[in-house]
Length: 326
Ligand code: SAM
Ligand code: SF4
Image (tube, rainbow, N blue to C red; front, top):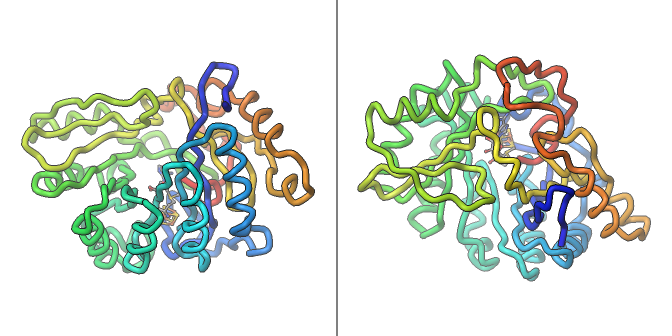
């Protein structure tokens, strides 16, 4: 088992397949002219499989593929197929722009639950936030995924003054549709122009929603990063990922692997462990994995506290979200 100093068992690995993406969400990929990592420095399908297998032997039983946009990788289908042979629950976070080409491969790989990002229900705002005119494609693919019976969670990064007025439009979507909305508090990463006054908190979201809807809290698993709710009678649910105002580090079971093979023991860690170079040199990556987890901080990578209102984003040492893998 992969256990840290605080007795947290780490059984959930998030693998970034690429730092490439066909959208340009400004809070994630700050620089339009960003240079993607060359393919030779990315983990190759066999390397992803072998490294993931090592994690699985050590106790990981859930793997999420992410990025960048995992489905822009030409060999995404091959990677998904290989990983589906491991004894893990395999899942995916995607922007849905290429989802229509992958439904049968996902089904064959046993993937029934998908997280999809969509921050606005307004096409013009989508263009502003992602710098690409793809709203209709994304929305149609989400609808298609739901029709095909996938359990769809929609990630919405809420930013004050930008899309917070749409919160109840997203909740309205859950009325007749079995869609699970996850509102995410805006988080600081390298270069993403985060300021504390753009964070729309869990409490603020609940106050907006409760003005229009009665809500009931749902029971959460100890590892859940989202606090889940339902509006009685609605087919879907909503949840809030309150990383900034009410973090959930005490139940953390997550490990991250960047597309260039660096292990991060926390989303906000400044330290990284280069598993890919060690793997290519024939070294035992198991020992490196356990060492990295043993060095994990109690909360937020040891770089922040819950007093986010006084946080200065430029003091945090980290990558941009697109190079970490959300
Ligand atoms: N391209 C895929 C997608 O957009 O779903 C997967 C990668 S993306 C980095 C994973 C998730 O991270 C998305 O839901 C995205 O909205 C979220 N994310 C990116 N930057 C963020 C930030 N600064 N604060 C909160 N969430 C963020
Ligand atoms: Fe691409 Fe996802 Fe980042 Fe948007 S959030 S730029 S879709 S990786």
